Image (tube, rainbow, N blue to C red; front, side):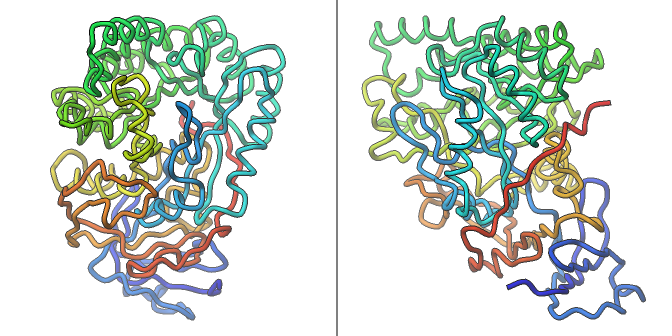
Length: 468
């Protein structure tokens, strides 16, 4: 049930802009006031419910702008659907996801979008929105893009990888980018040279190199950098903004930095797996490396420093998860004896906020940058701010009470994602979500699930708010 007035008192309120000891007043699903703790204003509030946040952080709910629930890949589907995936997201302090609706080749965008609405409708514990994957750029789909932007689907993802599945050639990419330049949409790019990678895959398999670690070796960092460079130049020709997803390699970060130094509207995202894991994981014995197969692939550890630096210098603006889990048993195992048949994707939606808090403690980023990367920047990037991503009067009351001192050990035994392994099994981190409100309703109550499928609402988005 909705409590009409809730006061969150005594916490350290952290947004991308500042940190202040403040109380937060919530009414009818929205934040109505933020006032200094102990001030006359805060003391004057009459609230039916008080949440004591003394000694805790009070932060905006996380915005994960890259998830794949119930996603078809490699002859199977990702193991989290919208019900289990959004519940796990809430456990980790994420209160909004932006998932990807998929256009099937030869079919209309609308058909794909309708199918994703049907998957998510009445299933979500938290609010959700959609990007659109373009698999087939033609006159019809280009016209549809304009209509979708009007309806609040304002970003379109294309793939330079996966020939025969999602792949678009440079001509198709240019045409779609010209369209987003005209209609205000944002082009999202999976930047890897899939045509060249397929040659290397074929050669590796022919030479008997079939183990999971070869997945990382054939998907070379230079082919990510080359595709990133090409995507930037095509976007320049089209006059379109560009958002490069799951950046994993130092050379690709350098391409983005060069573009941004020229003042181009080019943005980049990375994911926790690239910041915390490496090719060492892909080389785990007994096919264990299959758990870590995702694309772009995990890189040698040396790349991590460049990614952290990019997050500090704002050459990378967003940390999303690319949450696309497949169970080890029965799904990842499809690729035994042929790494190219391992479903690409990893679980992560539950751990993003915690891993980034650990990064604060490790000295990689500041507390405010944590909130910027996980909440404010993704909300701005995808037209959800200040409804999402911050704590200010008028914002949705998506509020997380975060215990910065709690110790936890990440494990498949205790996580809530519907997948039979953890990518971070045994990792000890400091900081944990305690209570989560979504539009003022309690979803996690002091580490107990209090949410429900169907609370989450579909949220149309505006245009990218990071463009001049």
